[in-house]
Amino acid sequence: MRVIFAALLWEIATPVLAELVPFAEGTNGDVYYIDYQGIQKDGNFRKASGAINYFSENEYGIRSHLGRFEFDCKEYRFRQLSFSCSSRTAWTGKYHSKK
Image (cartoon, rainbow, N blue to C red):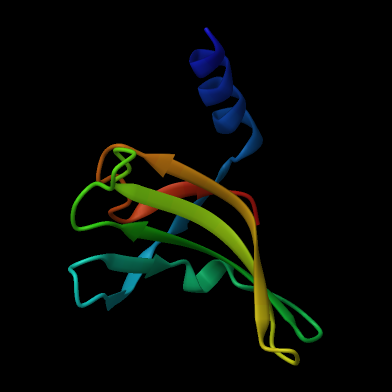
């Protein structure tokens, strides 16, 4: 029941459709995506959404990861604002995101 409620809440709270674009591939086969159109600028800070499709699942069964990050361009640091993991290779192009 919690999973259904969380999925419904996600769909209601995140109505904007964004596009994930692959921008890098790791030497181990992991594919990295970013939403270029959704990058938000605020002074020295940038917020962006991105995803990773892992080549193979890790010891916890995770195959993909979607997250929102904030970058400090002046101090060269970043922090993760949110993340979601999946046991499937799930991030292939479009997802729902708040802008």
